[in-house]
Image 1: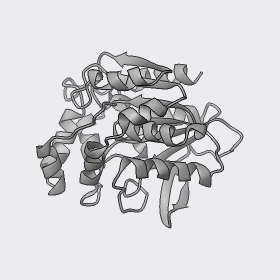
Image 2: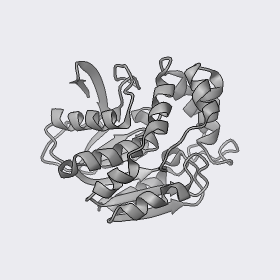
Image 3: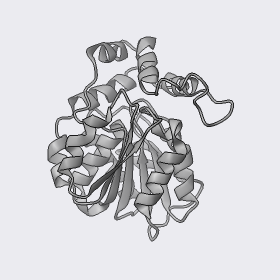
Image 4: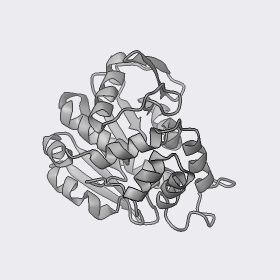
Length: 263
């Protein structure tokens, strides 16, 4: 689906179904440097089980026009406009990494529009190392390498992918390689600068699910504890075998957690 948001073309994957405002809706928001395809299994499942699915490409990602948005709050407002364009009054918002901060901020800014939120691979604060930021600023290949290696558990290069013939490192690098110069840095800088997490968490009134990878070195599970304690209706699922890229490293376990949460 293509939409016009702020005068720019925006894309959302809908699992090949028309959006029906009378149905329950699930919005999937990807992480830094990624796109809607990161949610392949999860978005298709809900799209074929009675829900509207909007797996978005944030501005300057995937099929959405740029420029990239500079702040998490701007991205949360953009997601709200996606809902408005589809006449959807409320939705479940599922976010991964940077997308989890967007989902958190969305629920804080628009409590009447957030039915539930699921935060996958989240930590607060979501600080980014100076070396990573500098490499991304220079559009250096090492930034993509750092993002890929740190974004997976250590077993991934050794036939860890549950899909035969697939290589998760190569898959992630291919996505990152499609980015326009400066986009990864804009995303990382937005995560690094986001300072409203605890205030946002205190405003969240809807149920919140935290899906965390026990082997995540980018956003270790302990980094989510303060947010979990601040959100009254929160619960967590920890996936023992996964690193940061839970939807790819543990797709079935991630989907099962979402199905149980939305049931």
